Length: 287
Length: 319
Image (cartoon, rainbow over all chains, first blue to last red; front, side, top):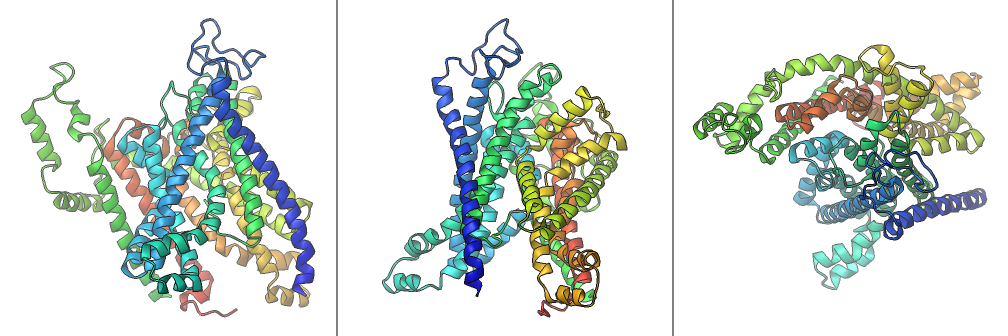
């Protein structure tokens, strides 16, 4: 009965889900291509000045106009995107590496290891993430590295908790017992038998979360805590442009638009993946 | 109920102690010597501006920096409990006084944005749940996806430009009166409206499938009464935790929104202090944030217990 009703419904789901994945994926691919290849092939340099061309509005020569030093803003936005997105990907890789490893170890070993890891996780999740990241930046100075350290320190806890939940279900499976019986070390059981099973669902959550990570990093940079001028970064560009907001709104428009489009593409992709792999409610990060 | 409440309140203390330890450790291990920050680094700058080594050591002694760390922690905690958060490096005024000046503005902003959040997210969630799978549902979902991708700092600046400069319909001079706070409050709320409305949608859909709804309908109650008086009231419960956290976070000040709209609240004060490396303020702010979040969680849990008897009787499943 359920199958008869659910079958066509799931098919329709799949059709729309594919659409979301294709649109989101294509947009993201295009953005990644532009920011990775763009800075290499562009004639103009993101840092080179040109006198007499300050604060020009967008034109055929300068697609995104120029900034207060006459630097081509299109080149700066692309270069800024390379910095922003690289930072977000590095941060997310570190978060996943730490979160999955600690979550898997805590879930598999149980007892006091589990207790210790989960208490740390509880405390970290109790801290408001943005405030805490700001505070870390405040104490350890400014710079992109500091922001990354701050974000990673706080963010892994969420992934440790998800991974641990999955591991608790998975560790009773037969192949784990088989590996144990075959004399595999704990290390090999955790990383060969358990982590690969937990990784899939966790990566789906990570795709959805990458957008908020990009927003957080850009937000901190916007506040002046991240990448420092003259190096471009999307948040830094926005905060530089803010001063010329009334005369040259294009300096705030374009970097923000790029952040928005990237996060939107990630949201569409994440939404598609999320429905594809789990049409019911997979844990959402919430605020 | 009283027993549950007491037990729940007691749980707060270990969390606060752990958080205070982390904050203390962060400040202790942060690079930069407090005396250098207060008086400029040794042997640098003009001779008149620097102070001698003996004077530095004396200041260190006065600040208690020569004691071993556990004793420093105990002294510090003792002061914190008595609401003595030290004086700022910048103005040399008590941190508590500066905080008290800014808290009302931030609180106004927080409650205003909380109100905006409720009157937008709840109807949106209800509309999409009732029209599940129809055009209205997809519409709400699409708008939610778009808005959750929008950086608040960008949205804030764009609105400031369009409404304040191009069309000149709002006052953008910055200040703490209600007319200055509506747009910032809306920008703050917009960031979380998508999340709340989607969670409400999911929770309401599952409530509408419950037997008591069928029963209420069978009694002949109108659709509106069934929906708002029965289903929505229950469906809101799972979201309260997030709402509480949001209000808590907002009371701690929105650094981005206050900075964009030049609102003289807690968030902007903290940002200025961070950029000026004014440690006592940063420390006080972290403590404030932790206390607010712990309180918000406590209030949410207690109100769950009041509203849902299953919790206060120890989680026995009635349904």
